[in-house]
Length: 466
Image 1: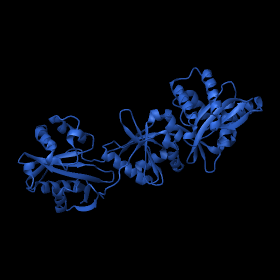
Image 2: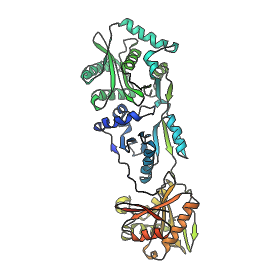
Image 3: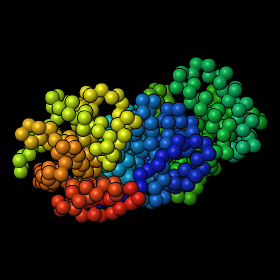
């Protein structure tokens, strides 16, 4: 039904928001690491995160430098309602509906949910998922290599200590990282960025709840690791160790897992390998139960008008806009008094005021799958337009009608509305709806006269369904 709904209001994710965001992550059943506080904070420059909350459900989106908006699958108690709000937001803002960081289970859900979609993934950014108990105990032949490395470390450094990471240890960790940087002068660009982000995270441990620890040998820190709980998964964001201590990496991994154990946590995510062959080899050797792909899913826009047809009836014709309509369409679009209830201020909302811009916009919006403009004609005279817009993913389409001044009051709008309503119902197989400003008595009478019923009203609009 064409009911008035509250639009999502997104906020830029800042440090001050992270603690409140983290409380929703307990509902996160996705396998991937990206919807986590550590990633939001460390890789903010890459993702440019925004968030909204709807009915105890977290909705994240990433905005590219060019303004491209992509959504994450919602996390929380009302996922399906949140998906609906994302759909509404994309329709109202003429955004291509896209989802990123979609795991395989959610991909199957999206395939069932939407008729048309495409999806891709990049193996370099697939996450490594491990069974918690495997890493906690390293039992079985397949983990003999890890056990051998750990035993070698313990034999060489029998008095090593594992300590839990707290804010009080930050200074010591920073000293260790200075030495680590000297030891790893051969870091590539991605490693340098990750190292820089690690320093940033260590200096901001209070932004949210993290779990971490470090290993000392004779009082000297030789390795540390930090992660967080996300749903049933321990996501490990950072693992750093000194090269000179053989077996320190698997020992650090094993110690953190043993000490960070929490009831209900079943999996470990060590994030991706960024295409680094050494990291890929290392992470594979720990026998992941799954390498989880991050799918980028593009949903087909719901407008199903492939070509503007010519519709005839009762002495008028609805047809596509033509180049010869440029002057008339410009006058229709810029008649201030005539458009006071149309819903936009062209001087503020339209880029460029050339006569061709309005014609070009109609063509561009149709090509992009946003709007379909039908010009109303009588004996080849330009009388106005009918527009189909705000196509929804659940099969609705909004109808708008506007006429030039001299065509008003002659029943033209009713004729056009009947023709387009019939087309929407019988050809497009969609449910028509409409809205008008409360003050717009002419439009209110138009819809009520032609079979539409009022379904809702707010301070600004009256809403109609057919």
